[in-house]
Image (cartoon, rainbow over all chains, first blue to last red; front, side):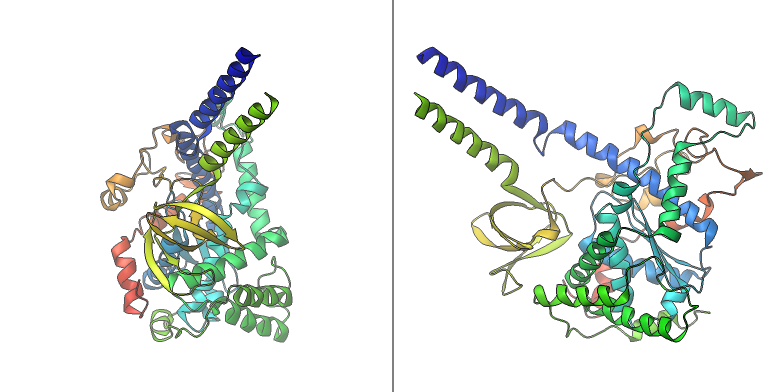
Length: 273
Length: 167
C-alpha cells in the first residue's frame, strides 16, 4: 500500500510538471503559437482593410489623416495590444461611421469627423473600434481559414498564373467580414463590449470618457432630423447604447469633468470638406 | 491512507492554481496601482510587462501584489499572457524601408513564415480581379501608404502632453 501511495504521488507530481512545462503561459511553444495567431490575424485584417478601401477611398488630406492617426495611436498606446501596430485613417464618405479590421486597421468616415466637436469625441469613437480589435470580435465570428500551405495552394497559384478564376476561401472569408461591417453588423453584445472598452480606454489614456456619449447623442439628433442620413446603421439602438455607456461610467465611478480638447481638434479639422 | 492521498491531491491542485491563475502581466503601456478599487489614491505606475500576483478579484478590479506593494489594478489592462512582441507581416514583399528603419528592432519579430504570403503571391490574395498591376478587389497601394505612418511612442506622449494630458 505504501508503494502504491508513492506511485500515485510521483505520478501526480510528474503530471503537474508536464502540464506546467507544456502549457504554462510562459512556454516557448505557446509563445510561438501566439505569434503565428497574431500574424494570421494581421494578414486577414490587412486584406479586409484593403477591401474596405475599394468601397470608400482614403480621404486625401495628409494633415487630417496624420492627426486622426496620432489620436488613435495615443489611445492604442495605453489601451492597445503590444503585439500589433494600429493604423487610423479617414475615409472619403459623408456617411457617419467607423470600421475596424483585425490586426489594427481602423477607419473613420469624413462624415463622422464633421459631426464631432472635440478630440475627446474622436478618441471615444476610435477607442470603440480598438475595442472591437482587442476583443477579437471578427476573429471570433468569422475566423479566417487555416492556410494549408500545401498542394491546393500550389495548384491554385499555377491556375491563377494562367488566368483561371479560382475561388479563394480566404477571399470569401474577407467578403463575409466586409458584409458584417457594411450590412449585417456585429453581434449586439460585441457592440456593448466595444462601448464599455471605449469608456475605459479613453479614460486610461487621459481623455474625457464622455466623448463617445456626447458624439452618439449628437448623431442621434442628426438621425432624428433626417432619417435618410446613414448613421451607424449596423449598430444597436442609440437609447440602449447611451444607457449602458452611462451605466459603465456610474459603475466605475469614472470622472467626466476632465477638460475637453477643442482648439486642437478644430484647427486640425478646419479644412474638412 | 485515503486522507494522505486526498491531502496530496489538494496540495497539487493548490500548486497548479498558483502557477496558472495567480499571475497576470500589465498589458497596456502604463497603468496605475491604486490603493483601493475604484480609482482612489495612486500608489505607483506600472509599466507594460510588470508581473503581478493576484490576491483577489472585485468586479473589474484585481487586488494584486507587486514586489512588496499591494494594491488594485483594472483587470482590462492586464493579461494572463506576457505581452507579446510586436508582429509584422511587412518583412518581405511590399516592405516599406521607412517602417523597418523606424520600428524598434528589439520588438520586431521577423515573420519568416509570412514570406510568400504577401499580396503579390497568388496563393495569398492574388485570386482577385486586376487590371494591369492594379487590383480591383483589394487596394493594397493605399494600405501600404497607411502602414508607413509609424509614430514613435515618445512623440505620442508629447502629443498628449501638448493637450494637457500628462502621464
